[in-house]
Structure formats: C-alpha cells, structure tokens
Image (tube, rainbow, N blue to C red; front, side):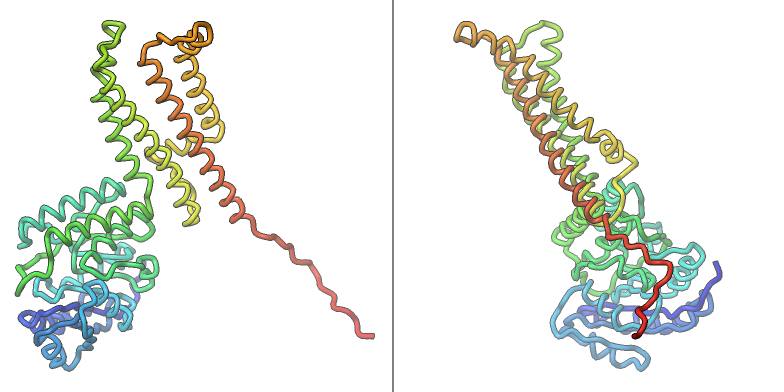
Length: 411
C-alpha cells in the first residue's frame, strides 16, 4: 500500500510530573526530525495535558514555545487527559506516551512506519522485552492480564496496558467509549481484541525506570484493569467468560459426583451419606447448564444489538448450531420423558398402594432432569423472542421506484 503523508499528534498526560515533564517534552521535540525522516509523518504536534497538577508541571510545560498545554483544574483521570488531547489535536494519527520519562518518543517513527506497512489501525509498544525496567509485580500483573485477554479473545498481545501507542484518528469512533482512569489502556486493548474489528500490532520498546512517584496502585488499579477486561468480554464476546464458568462448574460436578457414580457402578446401590454429594453435584450441573443457556442467549443478544451474525466457530459456534429450534424442542421433551421414566415406579407405588418406597436417588435424578428441561425451555423462549426482534429489525419497507414519472399536465 502506498504511504500517504501524516500529521502526528503526541499527547502527554501529566499529573504532578515536575521532575520529568521538562525532559519528556525536550525528548519529544528532539524526536520530531527522527520521526519525520523515518516515516510518512510530515508534521508532529505536541500536546501536554496537566491533569489537575498541583506542582510546577503546568508552568514547566508552558515554558516551551512549540507545545500546546491543556489544563484541568481538578484531576479527571489519565484516560480523560488523553481523550481531551486527542480532541484538541489535529493529526490524522494520534498518539500518547507517559510524562514520567519511561518512554522514548523516537520510537514513534517505527510505530508510524509499521502502521502504514502492515495496514494497522493501532500500534502499541510492548514493555515486556529484556530491556524493560518495569517492576516485577507489574510485569507479573501485565502477563496475567495478557493471558486472560488471550483466552477470552483467541488473539494475543504481550502488553495490555502499554502507555505508548499510535492510533488512526478515524478509528477512535470504534474505540470509544473508553474510561477516564488508568484502566484506559487495558480497556482499549480489550475492546480491540474482543470486538475483532480493528487491526492491532505490537512493537518492542525499551522501558526505563520512571522519574518520581508512581500514580499506579497495584491492588486498586489491578482490580480496575481486570474489571475493564471482563466488561469488554461481556460486551463483545459475552459467551466466552460464561462458558468458561460453565466448564469449571461442570468439572467440579464430576469431581464431587464421581465417587457415588463409581460406587453405584460397582455395587449397584448407594449409601445414605452419598445424598449430600449427589445433591451438590446436581446443583453444580444445574448451574453449569444455566450458564450454557445464558451463553447462547447472550451471544444472540450481542449479535442482535451489534448487527453481526451469531458465532460460527469455537465452542460458542458449536453450541449455537446445536441450539436449533428443533433440537431445543426435542431436548425438552426427552429430558421430561426420562424424568418420568425414572420416577414412574414411585408414581405407580403411590397410585396403587398410597405409599412410596422408591429410593431417594430416583427422585433426585428426576428433579435434576426436570430442572434442566425448564432451563432449556426458558432459553428457548428467550431465543424465540430475540429471533422475532432480529426479524423485525431486518424487515425494512421495500419500495421499488417506478421506471418513469409523468407529472400531472397543467390544464
């Protein structure tokens, strides 16, 4: 693809960074020639956003002639500062890097060149290489978040929370809304990977030890990072986290119920104490089945809301194909019929003699089967409603224009 010229906006969010903001701006100004010489960028603008700083950050930033300084009187958040800088910038490529001296702005040349060469929508710098001076606890956290996001999206990046990125401005509409806090970056990564609409690539970057005190709280912001990833999964790939939970519950039910099942297979009977294991296994199986149905319904809701077809691949796609109207009807009927067969001896005893001597395990199994039938019937009802909504949305009045129009003649 032929490269076109670009204007690059570099946004530097800063909260009380008086120790590092001056050198960060100087390095960005010095990097402009490198960026222009080694990419299709023809102009670089630099915007500093003082996010409620109470030290000399604002004054230091204003001392540079060729820099735009935006000031928040009160702290609004890391993400809010970046988004404000994007809005005030005029570049067709928007970027940001932290104001704490950890990032090398000359790398924007490589990022912009890679964006054109690989036709990417977003390029982020990965701090997970051997040159990184990231603290160990944050390295571990980033690795865990990357693995979680990879499991949920079937796509992978090394650094979900990188604070140095380049984005095509015309892609911002596909990224917003994004949070105002420090979880702005993992939320962006999660949306790109889970929605699978934009192309994201990584480039390695050295990461220096920051100047001054970090604003990141490992526990509080770590929880926010985790929640932002789960929320993105619930929005764009809702079936996957629910199916993961269903799989864990079903595995637990096998562990809990294996002893009574093996004992019955060997002895053809059950001990009285096994009722507790069987009841717990029944509860786990029921909950797992509910989650499976929820996953299928959630995928249908997401496809209807976002105007995309239902999932066709992976476990979700397999379940969508299995949950046809016919299969749902047959499944409900089969579960109810098997439940009746299991408890039929007890029903016959009660009708004929007024007493029931049937073993409790039959009633337990029949109850489980009937609950599963009810869950499947409920999912069927919801899926039918969603299919009606989809059909109504798809139907638009189709008016065929006439081949010719003859206006009325004047009398």
